[in-house]
Each structure stands twice: as structure tokens, then as C-alpha cells.
Image 1 (cartoon, rainbow, N blue to C red):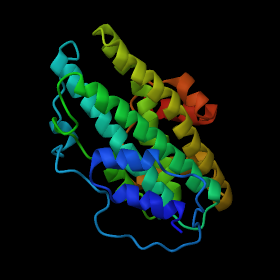
Image 2 (cartoon, rainbow, N blue to C red):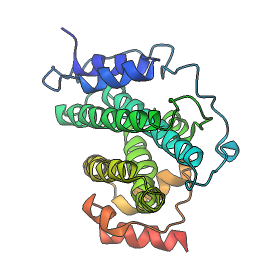
Image 3 (cartoon, helix red, strand yellow):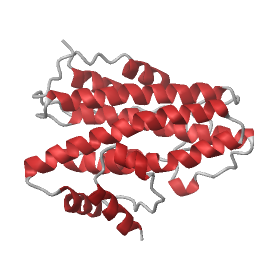
Image 4 (cartoon, rainbow, N blue to C red):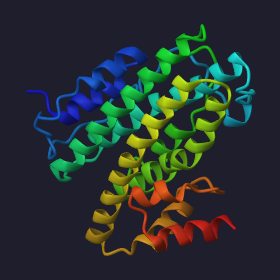
Length: 262
């Protein structure tokens, strides 16, 4: 019988974006997790389509969302983030053996929700006459996954609690841009994504705290050390403090975050 971890690995290896999203949406959370199984890392992680072209983030051109082409570029960038987020959740669900079953089921559910976000953005992008792959994109999210693949503590610290938490901070501005341009459908999609991403970051916070307790570490200094060691991007703010609080960041963590940004 296929285990949940094996099914997550199959999602990660799938190169076709639409098929990847369909596999993630269909993931059966009732499968045995295979928590104790030693799974060898295969070649081809992550499965990627031929397009979009991946370039350094400094080469991704910013366009005004006041124009249809600019809104399409913005929606494409968001769809790319959500496709990467499927891979990030699937990778967390297969890579790290020996954890509680709840860890794998949590990240499998995250993969399902990220797949929904990708499909919503992809379908809305089509109303602008574009498809996923039409614009260049960057690889920063997966680069952090690569840097943290040898340590589950670093992974949950620096992917959901850093890279994805930055999405909580960015969401209000993105929503305003779409709404100001008259794109009510796009703004509504951002509302769905923000609602779900609060839950995803909360999962990262919960497992980070659990792992820190198991290793006898204090959350705040442990995070700071991991961010330094793995060259996490600086978080300059502004911060969506209500969303971060809803996702489980403590006041001590938020104080440290704001102090580092100053």
C-alpha cells in the first residue's frame, strides 16, 4: 500500500503543474504515514515544467497592476509562489522520517490547500489571456528548501515561519493593488489565500515549538541562530501583526522580529 509520505514524494516529482495540483488535491490524508520508512531521495526533485524561465529574483521585472498586463504578471508571480508551496509542503511531508503522524498529515493538508490556491490563480490568470509559464519567475523559495533539507528544525523555522510568513505581510498590499485596479475576483482569491496561509504558518510555529522543546532550545534565540546559519533573507517589514499573532507568533518573537528590522 502506498503511504502518505510516498504519495507526497510523487507529487513533488510531478513536472506538470496542473497534474501536480490535481495529485495534491486528491491526496488521501487517511493513508498510513509510513513515518518510520527510510525513503531514498530520487533524482528530479522538484519536478518542474519547461516554462516559466527561472531567473534571479532581481531580474523579475515589476509591472504596474493598473494595466491588464501588469495584473497578469502579478497573478503569475503569485501562482508561481503557490506552485512552489505545493512542493514545499510535499517535501516536508516525505523527507523527514521518524516524526509523529500528525506532522505528515499537517503538511499533506497544506499541500492540498496550496494546490487550490494555485488553481484559483491559474484560472483567474487565464481570464487575462495568459497561462502559467508566460512570465519569468524566480527560485528563491525552493533555494531555501535546499538549504534546510538536512534538518527538520531549520526547515520549519525558515520556510513556513519565514518565507511563507512574509506572504502574510505582503497580502494586504497585494489585495489593495488588485482591488484598486477593479479586480474584485483577484482580491477575493487573496482573501482565501491569507486565511489559509495563517493556518499554514501556524502549523510551522507549532512544530517548531515542539522540535525546540525536544532539543532543549528556546524558540527566540534558536530561530535567530538558524536564520544566521542558513542565510535567511532579512525581513524588513512592515509586518502584518494581526495575521502573525493569529498564526501563533508570540509577543517575544514579534518584538525580536521588529527589533531586527530596525
